[in-house]
Image (cartoon, rainbow, N blue to C red; front, side, top):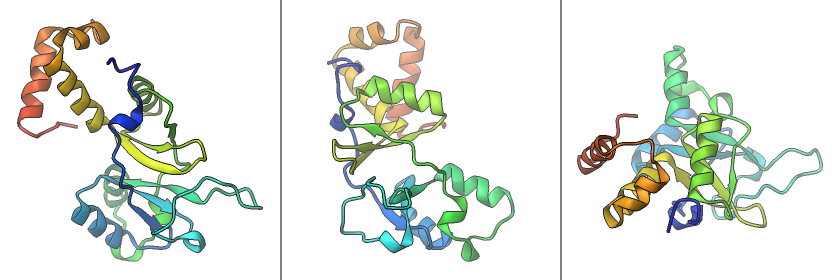
Length: 181
């Protein structure tokens, strides 16, 4: 199946980590390190409950339950500014608003949207506006590599501008479990 026919749900990570906007950045970094993840969804402190679905239903004051996302890029930007992790809260450094994609969208849609918004991760919403997963640029590259291994012509048809050396380089990078971005 091609990228424009495959749903984002086929390759999404289903376990989405969340934290409240009043948690300190050091704790969030520790959680990201322990879970080996590159982002955490941030929710408003008064609505934080790790056991519930994350929802986008609106409250009376029209604020979303979800507040934003903290990514590796946010942490680097924060540290680069000279701020101290221990005394800063998630709500101070998170990226907002949270940019999402629907579960009915294709992998190609996700890739195009990531490129348009200059982001590397997209939480995925179901028809009830609950976050059911997250897709990353790395997930898409993995999918492309797997697809390429199964059918090189399929990749070539989806990305006719990329020559064989590009595809070989992707394979080389992926086989070493290293992505330079």
